[in-house]
Length: 248
Image (cartoon, rainbow, N blue to C red; front, top):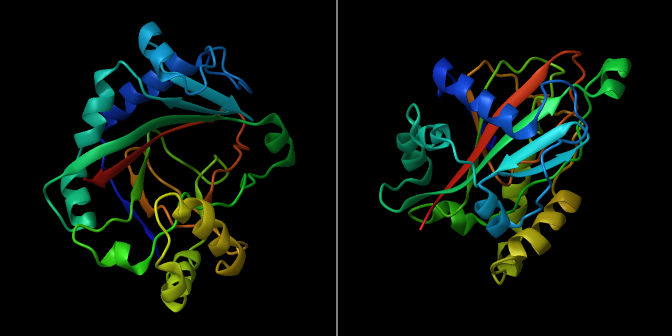
């Protein structure tokens, strides 16, 4: 289906340190629509100079990106069986690299709390792949690993995934393989991805909320159709970490 759950990837102590890390970057632990942290966009040189992370906030969802000067991020990259899992996912052992780390905090949205429901924020896939990406050795598709830093209950801004969409996208690329083989580089994101969302993914109404306990990881292929969601639980704050690895 393009995704699965691995229980107990991170120990409680590491989850607590990472929660503190994201709260330090975002600010007060109350519902914040926009963080008080200076918004640096993607000016990485400026962030390095000031030794503060890149923070973006919108609709009570805050993303904290590298540079993050906290050793907990290094520990997260190798916690549990993370490296062994990545080696099995890609069917290779040498050449594994950490591509991305991103801490996310989703505060309770007063409008969602008043409505009593959590809504997906926009269906998308991060990029798309062809059959040859899955057949290569190592595989050249890419996975996200989302790890819960506290329990993720229903309505608490859990990740939403459409279980059937991954199969639909793979079937579509296999059917149209001859005409798609010429795609290169950014074409997979700018050409193939929107085509799959329009022509291959049939129905997002059968989505599921990915409910996790503290320390659990959800691993999903970047071609999975998914969405972030609002947090409708008053007084609840969701904190997660995204990590992405690849082989070079």
